[in-house]
Image (cartoon, rainbow, N blue to C red; front, side):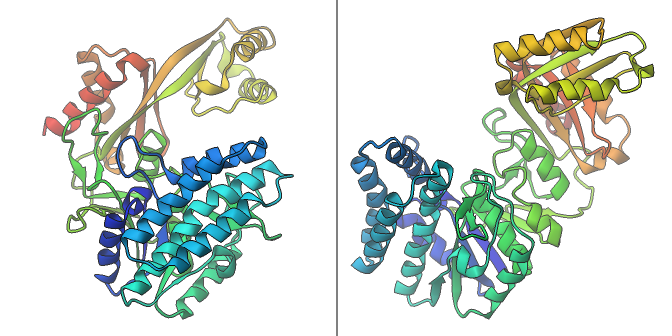
Length: 451
């Protein structure tokens, strides 16, 4: 039995929904269908979720949002009309949406979560109705009725363990279950959404709960590629990679998955198959626990900008008990979180997201790290990009770091920082943002084109 999830681009129009229907009924094991809100129909289009965010924001400000409300409803109406659905489904969607818009606004975060979640919720109602119109038994199931309970953290909900046992009971239902992604319910009955790309998280949670044999995630790409196709033309597709490799790549900039999206499937040992809705005959990419290390030491290269570094040097730092703790306490006091912290005997580098560091915070951090720790030097560097080389097989191959460093050197890319995780699944290079693409090209040529 399979859980299958479709992203917003796969559900953006009537034509796309017809493809989705053929995919679902083409395999009798596809019993659970998790859906996103309608995405973009073309490059300059607007996602329904973005329309909903704008609409909810205007409501909270007490402004009229009639045009936005109609635009949201017209997206569903145009799909329903093209699919030849009756008026009943649109009457229900319209009623439910207007009820949400007029709901309690005393807690703005909860109100916005209700509005945002309606994108997936109403799409699930429409898709279930379409499946039934084609003679297939299908039922919309609300997460509350299924027992998908989450923490009360609007925009960052975490699934509660009891949800998995509740979801297992979905196996007792006949026909196809159409389940909205992106949100669950708190124990007091309030909607709480996952982080953005949360429909992927819902799919993994449902797969875990019903003990699926595979979690199929349909999107608009043929596979996960060894590198970002916008940087390297026609890159190599990855046939198979591990959960750890996928998480490392997602963290470092791969946009196929949010870096936490696969955790529920990972915990249950369920393989994930990534496929293209528009070309379902292609094999796609399979994400599993373990794979045969037959593709060389590196499986993928990812990069992401928007970082800065804090470089601290102090003679005999390694002998000073509590130095690292004091550094982290200063960062905590000013509300900064860090990403990486490579160190030497007399120096320490801290990598953090640049968007946390305003001018006043920077002045405060520099002053405290310099004076309270009696540091010899404290330097903050802006405009850092992290380039990640990922592969489980690196731990069994000697010289991978040397090859990567040599490739960057020959491309005249200066390495600001290098860090290898203790798991030996990834090597991270810090470079200036203006050299990010050059670095990615150099590494791809070394580990893939050179073959």
